[in-house]
Image 1 (cartoon, rainbow, N blue to C red):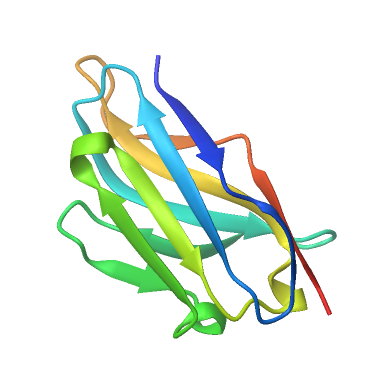
Image 2 (image 1 turned 180 degrees about the vertical axis):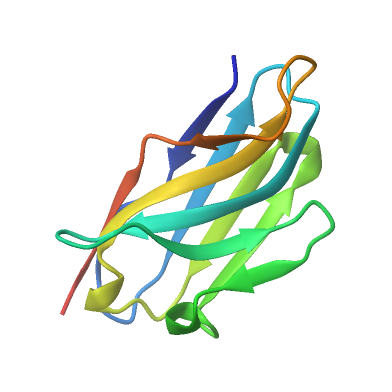
Amino acid sequence: QVQLVETGGGLVQAGEYLRLSCAASGSIFSIDPMGWYRQAPGKQRELVATITSGGITNYVDSVKGRFTISRDNAKNTVYLQMNSLKPEDTAVYYCYARTSTAYLSRVDRWGQGTQVTVSS
């Protein structure tokens, strides 16, 4: 069974930084893409950033220049470096991965979520 485990959330002040990590475990054949979504109270879940196995990245406009997504394919792990955090970045951040195993192809999977709170 495939699992995504996130670490790295917390409470910081505006202007500070956090780094999120998400490790996928299980009998995984491939993961493409991996990424991060977030959901603020009263709002819909939105894409933050994604990265393909080949390193192609995509960001929502509001985080461009502040957040950097990266991945370690050997470890099935994706990272999100979040710099210059703003109060509007406050949300639950969810790891996302489209995984393929020997039995199931291209299944969308989600982590349990990690809270990021930015105080002003």
